[in-house]
Image (cartoon, rainbow, N blue to C red):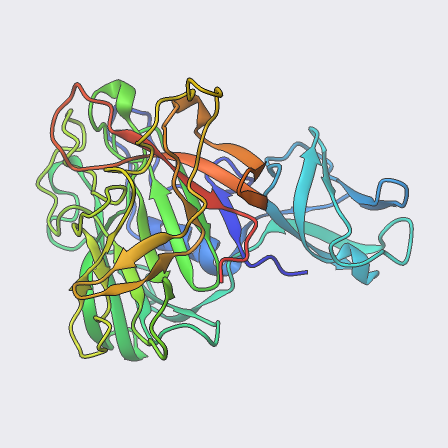
Length: 402
């Protein structure tokens, strides 16, 4: 069984980081670190380890995977097992539970033909099924494509080289662009270019990601932001929304950094190092490849919601029932001229209790059979050191999104 939606975390087994260093201090930032991280998520996967055994429990309808040493495969994440001679042990599985040396999964690839697997067994965290179209020899520039036949013709180009001022003002940015008509690593038509952070400089190194075969949400922690108590992630994205326009070929979205040239110190207390990704009715740093009419020219995009931002709108806990609420409706996306569609896989919390960061909610009222992962991200570029701008955003990590 192949799981269409997967989530990833820097806390997972073998996960790469953008840079090394302690929180509140300058980091060592190599060229190509963002490319290595994205390639691991989108294409190759990561965290490969040998398995000592895989044992089928017919009564519990589970498979217990045993490793010879400790591991960091996480509950509810997707892992991939390979190398077994019996087909039921191979393939992608959602993790049900873990211990220090074991990972327990269900029978998502059929009932194994034996009580225990034979063969050269391995486990890893699989990629999203994207592909590398072109990459330079130094691994500082890359173009990713989607293998899904429903993908728009837009590709993701990442230039993670040390271009002029890439590390100015204690920040480190990579060039990212929506491109098309690609023939090699240097020959393509740029639809829209902007920036993503490629460093955890002055932050505690950490990142989160959620995606499917058409779209990636990427949430790296970087910089101080606000006060030292408010250091958190920002939301970036590349990929196709769910469009309402018949025959739409350009509903590809890029959520980017707040500038193209970093003029902010990432080690100060301003929040202008973030973007406005979690604000409603705000078109800053959100770009669609083309408007609904499909004529060339990138356009601004925005979401509509019931409140000013994700994680706002109700007190927590709700006084009437002590409840925590999320929206059950898709998040509407508008381009410069029309309602274009919705954000795949996103739900809107109406409060942002900090303790809910990185928690999972299953089978919520109105969201039956859904598994929601909640993550804190900074919600705007507003300057100031005294206000907590962290807000929760929710992702359906079970899917499908389409």
